[in-house]
Structure formats: C-alpha cells, structure tokens
Length: 179
Image (tube, rainbow, N blue to C red; front, top):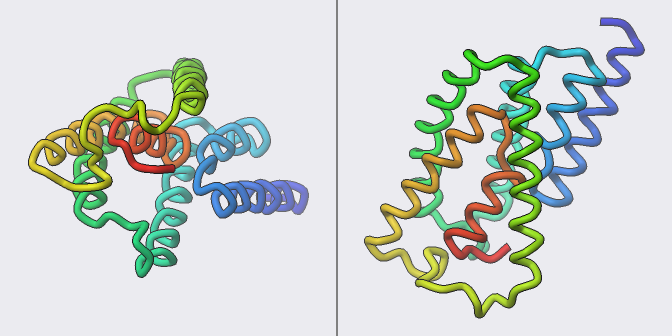
C-alpha cells in the first residue's frame, strides 16, 4: 500500500465514520463505492468490510444509547438473530453472482428504498396502520419482526449494506418505529 493509497483509505474511512456518526446510516452506501472505485477493492471483499464497519458502528450506537428509552431490546434481539441468519444466506448467495450484477441490483434496491422513504416522509405519522411493534410487542410482532429481520438480513448479506439503507426503512416503514 502506497502513501497515496493509505491517505485515500484514511480519507474514505473518515467520511464513512462521519456519515455513520452524524446520521446513523450511510456507511455501506458510501463504503462500497469508495472501496470499489476509489481504493480498487473487488466487490465481494468490499461488501464484507462494509458490513464489519456498519456492525461496529451499530454496537457503539447501542452502547451509547442503552440507558435512554431509544433501545428496544426484545425486537432488537429478534431482528438481529433472524437478520444474522438471513445475512448468512445472502452472503452465501452473493458468491455466485458477478460483481457488476451485484452493483446493478444494488443501485435498483437503493432507488426503490429512497423512493419509499421519500413517499413516506410526505405522509403524516397518523397514517401508519396497525399496531406499532415499537410501542408494544404483542405476539404478532414476533412473527412480523422475524420475517422482516430475515428479509433485511438477506439484503444485508447479499449487498453488504445495512443501517440507513435497508434496516432503518424496514424498521420505520414496516414495523412503525420512529425515525
């Protein structure tokens, strides 16, 4: 690794860390393109590295906010366990798809996710129907959180993305968690 390459890596890492710290998301969204196009990594190792960065950031966030009322332990654990299982399956499937195809599918999912979040931002919170799994956690939420966790895990493992890109929209739009 040359000094210029190391400088680019540090600058990229700083940008990703700033985005994660400031917004709680965007790490993978920034990391994968920076790692692939700026630092010359192959797509598969870049997705693994981005998942590690996002996981570390998420653990730090949970630790920082554990005493506030913002951490929902029961849905978080269920979502994490089923998400981890889905991520394993997604990462396994990722190995059989060419990097260019992954990047193309990644851009499609990114556009759909952004469009859904944009559309939901123009609607009031009172339009959320059904009982929010963030407020109470009845038995129906166990199944709902498990299924959403599995789907999110599949996407996370396959694309190497997480936080603000897949997890936050799933928690806010589908499960009714406040932003």
